[in-house]
Amino acid sequence: MQGSIPRNRSGETASTLILIGLILQAVEVLILFGIGALFLIVPFIGVIVLGLGVIALIWVVLVYMFSYERTKEGDYEGARTPTLVFGILSLLTVNLISGILYIIAYVKLGDALSNGVQARPAWGMPPTPLPPGPGTKFCPACGRPNAPASGFCSGCGARLA
Image (tube, rainbow, N blue to C red; front, side):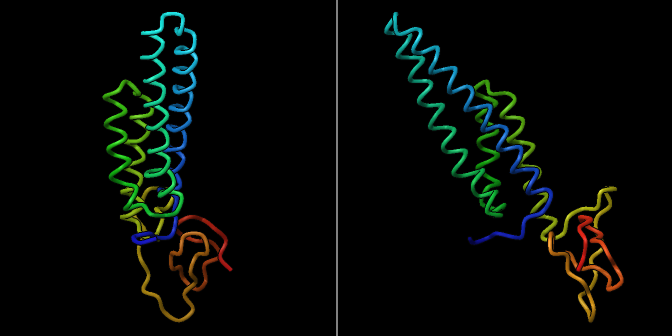
């Protein structure tokens, strides 16, 4: 898994957005197959709609393989470009909601990469990195170094051991 970093909140958000976009596209595939089957009475129109359904199904598989699966594995760098491409192409093919979700996921993947293993605190301020020293506690959830006296992670709020 080259280029992967530990998962963080932005990466998890991107993964969720991509999954929602995938679900919406899967619903579209089912609708296209249903309409295509209904229009098989008029073979030309039915075949065209079924063909569009097959293309949409292939599209869902590609988004899953190159965007969602990579994001779930923590390969944010590898998922970023395909997510942007899928977002733009989805917007151009009238999948407006999925396209918007993929573009937001692209931005979140960028946040995940810029944060590295650190997550932004809830109040929106960038984390101040601590130089690892004796007694530094590392968060088990996001990997951020914390002061020795900390009971909770200053990045993600997880309980420190």
